[in-house]
Length: 385
Image 1 (cartoon, helix red, strand yellow):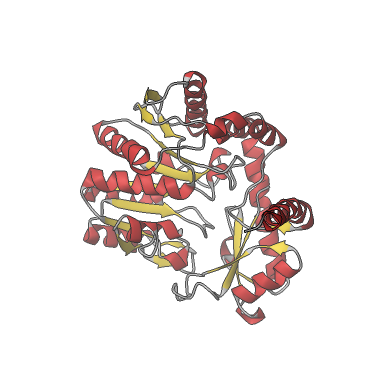
Image 2: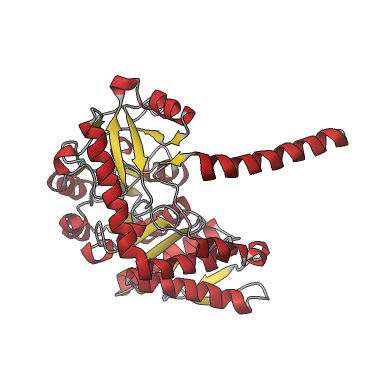
């Protein structure tokens, strides 16, 4: 490549970056349910933490989630930062252990599923079907199956309720005897029946994992549900959807007995050394600021977010759009789902809206063929405030 071409590519890169900031930051209505908003304070903290983006902090943590051992020098302040952020997250979610080293929600699922399959010596996991809202990382076609070799068994799902069927799922769990029972997901309108299924999970020796990525901020604000008090052993999450932090991931749990000690140790081992080296330290101070903001303002933010989603569902439904969950008020989370087959299907509608600078995504609905991801029946519309 000659030098002029090299410079031309660099100029094209800079121009595209500048145009993107204007396009998505000022010209679009952003309704992707997995894309969050950061406050001015979180943005400023990211700006002030740029040296951390060049640093490493490999090592081991203790059963409080605090730094125990590091393998590099120069950790004097990095250790304080990581411990403070861990304690802020633990305090906000009222638990005794957390790991903030994860670089995404999928990474959090990877480490948790791997750690628990090592703990239980069991490769079976009961999950929501992909078409009923599971994240691809839960599925046999994604991380769980292709990377970790887990065998997926589907929860029973009630399409009318847009939720897991607890009675039928209890029978499935008893028959399958999995090592992990997973709740949560990507299309996630109503609280999952964690409390109703905790006893049967205990009965077969399974750990309950709750993927809170989409509703993490709602939980922080005291809405939606309280997974750890309802019976979840682990919460996994990203930190940049309804939780208004920088991109990243987190795992939370209560270490209250030897069963959980063993599991947490294996999950921590799956974080490091099995799945990460550089933990993207530059995001951590901003994550701590987001936790502080949610402690102060999280309840109001969560309530307004859910009100906005419900109001949008009602408005679209009254204007002829088939919004799911009508009998239950459309949603209790930050997102709604609509069947748009009469408008050409999810792919066409998402592309048509993109042409009008309204950004959302096509989405499988529970009655879709989950192999038909390119043109599903539905769209998913998300709100972050």
